[in-house]
Length: 299
Image (cartoon, rainbow, N blue to C red):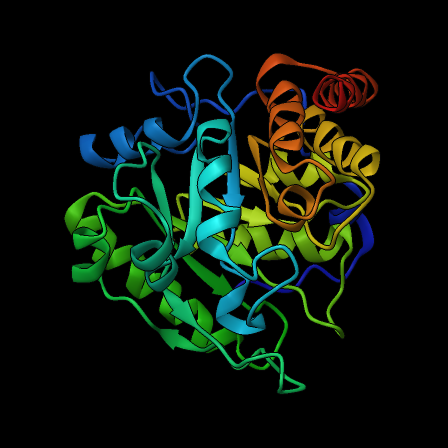
């Protein structure tokens, strides 16, 4: 077993080389070259081969939070946004009941369950709510599993992640490891360096995590693509700044929910986020674009 790094010369000598791209062969997403054709094909549906990035729309909040503001009616809130994002992230129940089967976007399927917000501790690790057979029947391009690093459910959630990766490997379906943060959990560079690396080394093909100071080191140290979580609702200008900083510092996309469907104009917000993620807009330029869209709508 490796000794813990408790500081000293070893810690001070760390160099993540954030300016040096990860070697990985011919596939455009890092960490994906060793995957089979089906897995790479599904990843290529989710990420643009031109920008290398993705805009994911998360609407899986209800599996622990119930009818979140903005998602009281999934059938009304989500379908209008589908043309303006790259990936839909939801539960099988929401997808089957509220999303048209004609939607031509890849699905990132939430496959784990956990305790609801009625409980003080939602970090017990949960279990599998949707097995590989259901994921195949849903035509999922990816399966998402929550992990609780540094919490009571860490061992259980990592086991669920590893089992899901094993099942996905049999059928060429990649896995998104979602780094959870609870009320008592850290949101520091040190924590996210550890959490994203653990999730990736346990087999996740991509990782969803939160932005922090030193984020360029987090993305450099993670051997698979990172997409940034939007988190709680922010003013639109701040959400665009979050996206811009994350992409500038190595994220390969955003997975936003509340910062899109709770925006003043969700479609305009989708389009502005896409400008940052795919076209290199700065946050200021993207907010100007968002404002122009609002003004055009109000004319």
